[in-house]
Length: 245
Image 1 (spheres, rainbow, N blue to C red):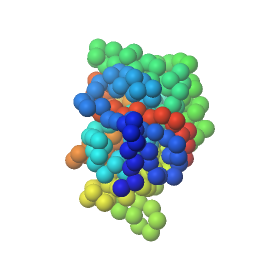
Image 2: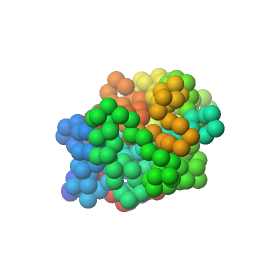
Image 3: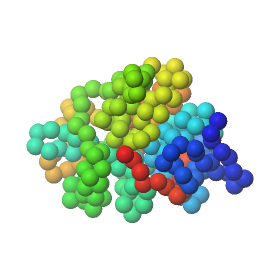
């Protein structure tokens, strides 16, 4: 097992791209997203991203709640361009740049009151997210239904690991994550995003809809753009790598 535990309750990974990155212990309970953000901040860390949660799960071999549903700081920002819907993924580690880290209570309150978290494209965070996501190739057309992708590799890549949406979420961890899923007898990996027919009720050319992204746990290792009323295990990350692709 590559996961190393140190004397001050932190973990380091052997995966390339994670040199010097430190992971805190997991929360003992499931937490709503605002509490998950606070859990990480209380440990002088930021909440994990999808890529980081996936990397930890690969090496943890089910240690320290790694198999439970995970809350992340990764956001899925849905928007409309002409007549088509797209989703932009972002997990900037700096709180002032990350809408989940800085404004999670705002989104939670919208969900609590039965509303989607809708913001204008001119909103400071939304404009930055769309610009960063386009530059890093993390803008993906929204598809009609869930993605159900085979994890078994054919030659050097798998359907899951090579998928554009999975690549936008996991970056360089996509194929290792697919191998981990297949090793644990998950023949397919699932990705749930909001469908165009749902977005059509909420999003116009001037607005964007924001959801956080979570990673499913035991029995369901899918990736979901969830409602902010959902709950998950939290883990903090220090010395965050900016690498995604």
